[in-house]
Image (cartoon, rainbow, N blue to C red; front, side, top):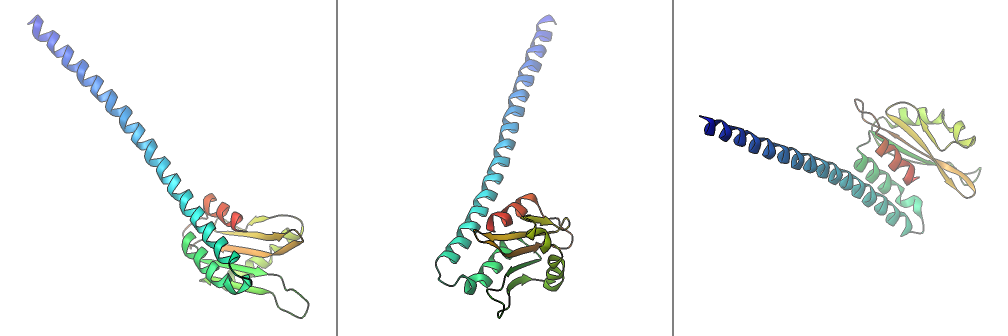
Length: 168
């Protein structure tokens, strides 16, 4: 009887050690999965930034490439609407407005109210949990703005907002 009791204690000890090692391995696998997902999102963001930069830098007239770029950004970030507005070059010309997505007019109206913030030096304006407006600046001053709105039942993530800021 005494020998059988010692045997059970050893079995329980071995089982405890195996479970402990299994928990540590599972924890490490979970950490690796999270890091891989972060790396994949970062890679996708960098691919988008590179593609936008390549399209805009390989042409003399960047305005002609804006519709393609706006469509690409709208698809890649899964936005409901994106609007890019570039200030008029002179009093005789109209501003250049390029948009993609649905409910564009509503986004344009909402962004016009936030443009005054950009004149005061602000670069990013979050209108609500779904909408962000980013100033497009050059060394000479304010060039225009980029407005983006997430789908109806979604919120704009900090990653999406940050990527839009980097695009600007």
